[in-house]
Length: 462
Image 1 (tube, rainbow, N blue to C red):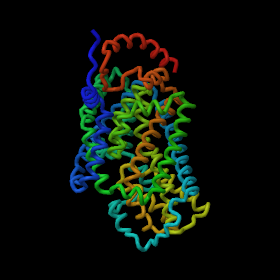
Image 2: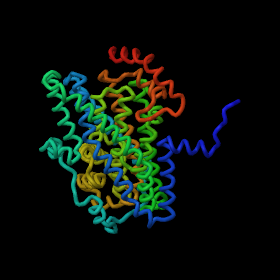
Image 3: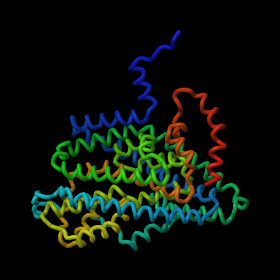
Image 4: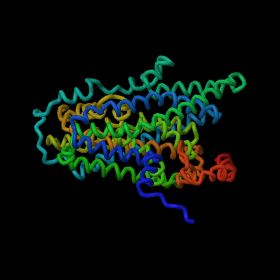
């Protein structure tokens, strides 16, 4: 007798019960509907997204510390770790500069602000101060000093990724220097703490649909859909420029590693949708680290490149800043010369590196760029207040993909990437972290012994 086929409602219910992607997608649609229909009620849902982000942020610093320390200690080569860091910084600078140039070229060709003829005197510059909290971007010296921890506990309490990275490097180096015989209990304890943190990540991720629902409802309720019509030309240009940059990332990934960016995007689709819904790459950082390790990138490469990229490799923000600067200039009728546009690139190359974790950092960087040029009124930055939140999706996707590609590229460059494992994982032959196969549970123990020798031989060859 043939097995009975589950009814459509049952299949849909099972997908919603087992698929995080489906849950987040439904939450996204519901959030948009609630924000559109009941904007007043939607404004009260802000704590849902904020609470989830807070929970994730409590995990990030200890997770980065554990992954980096274990990575250094197991790699057994501090020089290799230093090479990974240097290669990552080179990649970050090239990628972010390319993003700035693409943005500048796109704004010159399309000219999204031309014809607006805005009088800067009519703009409320105090709104920008409210957005930024009256803060300022750190100088290069201040940025370097703030990366150095003043307290071991303080680095974790302040959730400063760069400070935690430096502490992790010091602890990892100390473990290598002392050897496992002098401190035999330390490394296993850190490894066990890492497993506990990943388990906590699994618990917190169950709240992701609630967070996405709240964040999207607040966004639509606060800004509405009308802002898209007002700034349509600018929005389309930013997203088109981001698509071009991502296409170049896909080409670079294929040339350097032979991997497909589309398959990788499908592999992290749950995390990407969550990042879009919450407008935060930090909300998915722990899970992305876990998936990159599962996809063949060595622990030390993942632990160093991805967190550092959150401060140094903001490709989406770089695109937005270069386009935004020219949009403002065109809107107020200022024609920037080639020399001034080169100045824009040079200034943004510096200011974009100190943006992470600072409220209203995009507006601070735009204000600093306008001030350095002397030709654009600083108050004109207020033109982007209405559209800034709409740009978050573009920045989030581009930043996240840029940093993930950087992990694969630098890992391949350093010989810290298991290509066979990466291809199997992206092809769906290896289950993603924290995912249990719904069907054919007996395949798992059969597959692993057969694939293990191939994995080891590839790792040894690299």
